[in-house]
Image 1 (cartoon, rainbow, N blue to C red):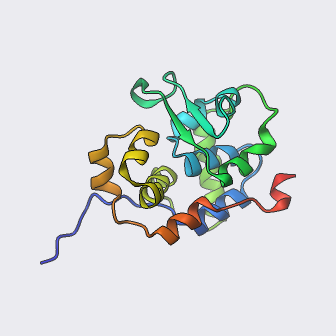
Image 2: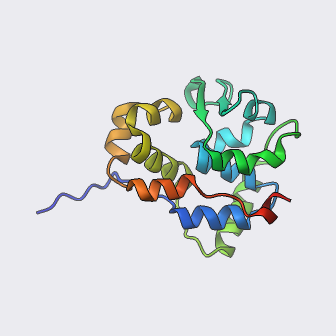
Length: 178
């Protein structure tokens, strides 16, 4: 009998990310972008400041104070993430200024409006899956703040290069940047 791998995570697809980002309002959009295109955990994205997001060119700096296990890391920004975040460059303070409960309520309402199923940690799992497909376990482990063996066991072979490129190429429409 074929062995079924019950450890494979569920994750969103590029079309889902496009719908979420394009349908989001300006307050929740950067959190979705950071989780989906920088692989941040939701808890990290809700604590990060704009100063940390824009601290280093081409990277999001996840400081120990917000990182799981106090393990700071840098995540390389893809062009799509840069494009989604650019309208926020002049902002100061926390990216998300409201409660975690409020974020989840807003995200669930958006997801339902866009007719997208609920997937626990679906944005981060998608990022890890697609990042692994393009850049391998070493780079993905380093940027995700994960052990290589965990990544290898959970995310290897779940996406093609084509699917991964589509994920990291979800760009804003011009009206989304206004």
